[in-house]
Amino acid sequence: MNSEKTVLILGANSDVAKECVRLYLQKGFHVMMASRNLKSMEEFIKENQLNSEKIDLLYFDAVDFASHQKFYDEIHSKPNIVLYSAGFLVQNYEAFSDFDRTLQMMHTNYSGAVSILNIIAMDKTNKNLERIMGLSSLSGVRGRKSNFVYGSTKSAFTTYLAGLRQELVSRNIKVNVFVLGYIRSKINGGLKLNQSLMMEPSYVAKKIVNVGNSFVNVPNLKWKMIYLILKNLPESWVAKMP
Image 1 (cartoon, helix red, strand yellow):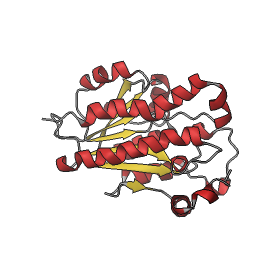
Image 2: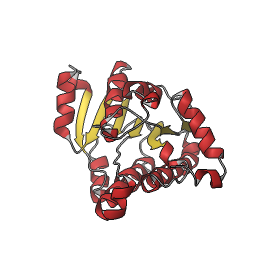
Image 3: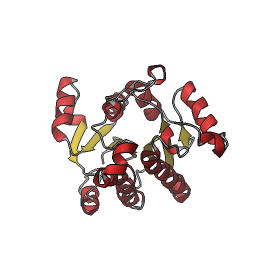
Image 4: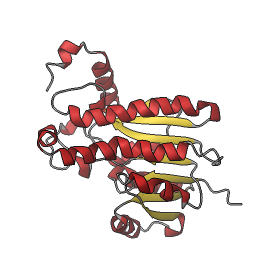
């Protein structure tokens, strides 16, 4: 029987996810990279000379809900760890004018996550499952006029993971959420962001791979302070923010 631990990364084409792949391989995990963009993942493995025998490439479409059960059923080695890192960002001005793009964001960031994670979490035949993690955002902490449509998808995801944590505690399965600030990654490409607050994907990945038991994880001291301030500001003050 194969005793090697496996990690399933959903949305594995993101910059943070790819850094997680490196670290999990170093820890001796077998990694299942799941994404629509198989070519990009293949190039990543080749360019970084990673051990392809320790990696499975799986086609996964977060917004194709009808395919999720089949996707999970066809995984040969059910995962010990699951990381949902799929994400899609639409700015508020675009969300107001193009609902199709907004719906894609909602489905990628929230609905798709709930669809596949429900399937994974409710499979009680998988005795290996020990942890589920999801990547959320500081944008979901409080509704702010500059990004509340995107923020609402992340807020919903965080709330879902909080309830999932309670649901799975009796089976000793840990659930963690990473509430992230600005990351130097392709999803933020072209945005005018405060460079002093930018985090590198490799830094965030280390925090994910070495996570403890705390449900909410906010990498970086500056972002921890911002998180606490946002959580506790009076609504009248939040309303004056950008």
